Length: 323
Ligand code: HEM
Ligand SMILES: *[C@@H]1O[C@H](CO)[C@@H](O)[C@H](O)[C@H]1NC(C)=O
Ligand SMILES: *[C@@H]1O[C@H](CO)[C@@H](O)[C@H](O)[C@H]1NC(C)=O
Ligand SMILES: *[C@@H]1O[C@H](CO)[C@@H](O)[C@H](O)[C@H]1NC(C)=O
Image (cartoon, rainbow, N blue to C red):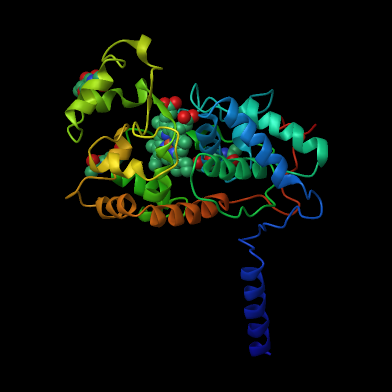
């Protein structure tokens, strides 16, 4: 009996592996209920990136900020409402995460073809992948079937989204809490090969850090003044070599002590006890290694605590819980 049960389990495991199932999610989740989903999301994401290239970076970040706070459940998309405190005012989100209008636009197109079927959390996962691909990065198959939360958690947004002043031990611990190794954390950080940060998030680094290229710091000081709140929102590219191309130049920058925010440069500190310098060097010298490991880590990130089955709901409007 025991052995036939274990045979069954092995066969089931094999079946799940070959069918691409990841956790309780599956890439084929909508193949009958919404066969055109992938092209609708991909076309709408392309349109948004065509209108503004940076939107690709913003959409990738939204998926990250969704998944790190009570799992990939679309909670970041909820607006504050009577009886609901959203996550949009969290430290890492307020006046910073963007792309909500684009998510609304994608959702509207999806609702037009498959009303009431596709979750906002899945739309974020697909748009993050499509954005990465459109900006030149790796692709991966997106497991689907997440459902949307009926709540949000502002205090978890404040505690679990990593801050730009984090040190290496804080980064490793924060990602370990979500199930990631230090190496996977280093791969996921490579998302900072695209997009921008505001002066308030790199000011301390350019004026006070020692692990920084002095010329790089001086150049940034011309737009980001040391004590001028008026310059708080001044943007600088994470990767000044190729700011909106998803490549491995981020790691090149780190090796040159040109990481824009303090936390990124913490990954490259040869001699530091938890330094990821050797991983940075591998990703820097081999873009395939980075791409493969980034893609695998994104699938893993997309599988953080999804709501499945009868849990949660399929929101009709990503910003509000269904009435
Ligand atoms: C490792 C810890 C991380 C920290 C401390 C961090 C912090 C930040 C900060 C401070 C910004 C700039 C926000 C602003 O100035 O408005 C930012 C932007 C961004 N982050 Fe992260 N992040 C981390 C990991 C990640 C991960 C894992 C991803 C995705 C997989 C990601 C994707 C992005 C993208 C694409 C942007 C640019 C967004 C845009 O231009 O709109 N980050 N991050
Ligand atoms: C929010 O998250 C924190 C942990 O970060 C947890 O202690 C708390 O119970 C959560 N609140 C709700 C309402 O789920
Ligand atoms: C890293 O940051 C944490 C939290 O801010 C702090 O407690 C710790 O002492 C720091 N570690 C090092 C090595 O600086
Ligand atoms: C640099 O560090 C000092 C001492 O911690 C602090 O008072 C100052 O505000 C910092 N400067 C910037 C620009 O962050």
